[in-house]
Length: 156
Image (cartoon, rainbow, N blue to C red):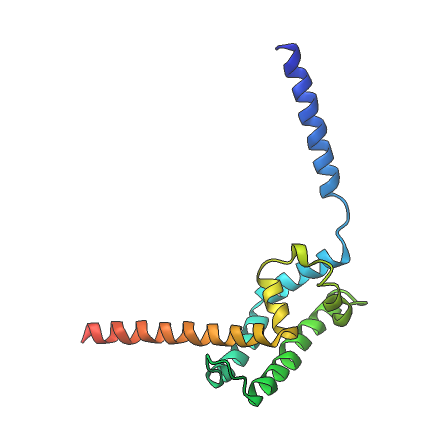
C-alpha cells in the first residue's frame, strides 16, 4: 500500500462520515409533510377519490382559451373534495398541521419543488394547472378509447 492510498482512504472515510451525519439530521417539517403527501397520494383511497372526481368532470373541459364559469365551480369542488381529504389525513399524521401554512411555505421552497406532489398541489391554488390536469386526463382517456376501438375494429 502506498502512502497516498492511506490518505485517500482517510479522506473517503471522512466524507462518508460527513454524509452519514447529514443523513441522520432530522428532516424539516416541510420535508416530513412532503413525505406524508407522497404516501397519501399513492394510497388506494386517494386514487379512488381523485379518479372519481376527474372522471365525473373531465368532459366539461374544452381545450380553448375560454374559461367557462362552470370550470371555476368544478375547481372549487375539487379543492373542497381533494384538498380537504389531504388535510384530514395530514392532520391525523401531524396533529399541528395547517394546510394554509404549508401552502404558504411552497413559494420559499420553490427551488426544490419538482415532481407529482407539487404538480398536484398547484392544482389547488392555480386554476390553469387544474384545467391542464383535466385536459390532459381527457386527452389520455380519448387516446385509450381510440386504441381500444382500433383494436376492436382490427379483430373484426
